[in-house]
Length: 335
Ligand code: TRP
Image (cartoon, rainbow, N blue to C red):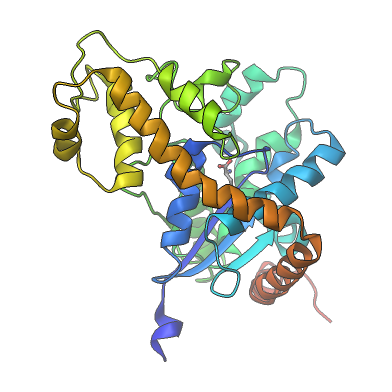
C-alpha cells in the first residue's frame, strides 16, 4: 500500500444556510482546509439536511452555490479533496433507509437537537427532523470515514452513528468503521459579540452579534466596536470572568498567530477601543481575499458545476460500493 492509501479518511458537512459566519469559518471551514494534506477528505454541503426545516426552493438553490463558493474560497481544493453536494450522491439516502431501520425510536427521541428544534419549530416537527441523525450516520458510514470534524452540538449525533454502525456490524458482519470525532483545539467555538455566553449564530435576531463572511470592512469594524466586553479595562485572557474579551482574543489569535500572553502585552495599558479596532482590522484584512475569491466563484457557474459533477462522481464511486455491500448483507435480492 502506498502512503496515500493509508491516510485516514475525513468526512464533514455543513448546511447551506446562507452566508456563513466568522464562527463557521474559524470553527469549521478553516480547519477543513488545513486537514487536506494530512487526510483523505470528503466535504459536503448538506442540502438534504437543510430540508428538515421549511426552505424557499430558490433560496436553497442559491445558498447551495454560495456554500460551495465559500468552501472553495476558504481553501478547499477540489483536486485534493472530494467536494460535493449531498443530494448529488443518492447513496446517502439509500443507506439512510437501512440505518433508519436499525435505529430505535427511543434513541432518536433522546437527541437533544431534535428536542430543541421541535420546540423552536412546533408547527413542523416532521419525520425528517426526527430521523436526521440516521441520514448523518449514512453520510459518514457510506464512506467509512475514520474522523469527523464536528462542533460540540453534533457530538451526540456522531455517537449515534457509532452505535448504529456497531449494531449493524454485530447483527450482520463487520462492515463499518466506527467513526471518531475530530475536535480542533483552539478557536473551536466563537461566541456571540453581543452575548459572549452564547455561540455566534446567524439565527440571532441581533445582527451585531455575528460577523458574516461577506460583511464589508466598515460593517466588520463597527460590529467589533460594539462587541460586549466588561468594565475592567484590561486585555486579559480569562474565559470565565472576561468572556467577551477572551472571545475577541481568540479571534485575534486565529488571524495573527499571536498567543494570549503576546496579545496581553501588545495591548497592556491600552483601552478596549484600541483592541477592538485592531481585531476588526485583522479580521477584515483576512476576509478580504476570501471575499474576492468567493465573488469569482459565484460568477463562474460553469466552473462550480464542473467541480460538483466531478465531486459527485468521485463520492458516488466510493458510496455506491458500500450501498451494494450493505444491501446484500441485509438480504435485499440482487440480480
Ligand atoms: N448536521 C451537521 C450540522 O448541522 C451537518 C452534517 C450533515 C454533517 N451530515 C454530516 C456533519 C456528516 C458531519 C458529518 O452541522
